[in-house]
Length: 234
Image (cartoon, rainbow, N blue to C red):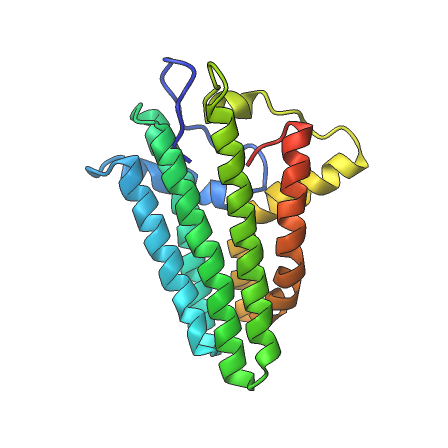
């Protein structure tokens, strides 16, 4: 994500030391290639959104083949979503507007995916329940986006409001079992959600994400509120 840097020191791309998120390993290899092109971080964000929306649209077909293609496009989307921030920091082109654009792109992809998966599964099975599950999941993602907007608006009113990177550096780390459960659910699972989608699509069972998403999306924005209160940010 693109955000203002609190340091003028040059940013160096480093190899990930942990297994998760998996997309970080992909972006580590893709970012050097992007740096050779005349692309700004916002261009990369736009490409990420385009790949994500195209991937979501693939699930409208409700077939195995299109589902797998959609899953692969979502992996590309999430990988580019990592790359835009890396490019921004390396080129010293970070901005709060870039961070907001990134958030909008994430919201569009999330809501489109669940809506398209719901429509595609409904079309394939004739069961309207899947459609409503998709709508509920998309609505939950929208509420979570709204929570972020409200929090951002409040933070910007504060004098000397910190940039997103400054906030990230000051995040409180998990300290107990409850902290870790929220952290894993809210951050790690989201970072590699595309891998989960692609894996389920390969087995032809991406539809299981609809009831899980209908419930999980609501839990997601609720835990987001707890994250804000506990000093974590996404």
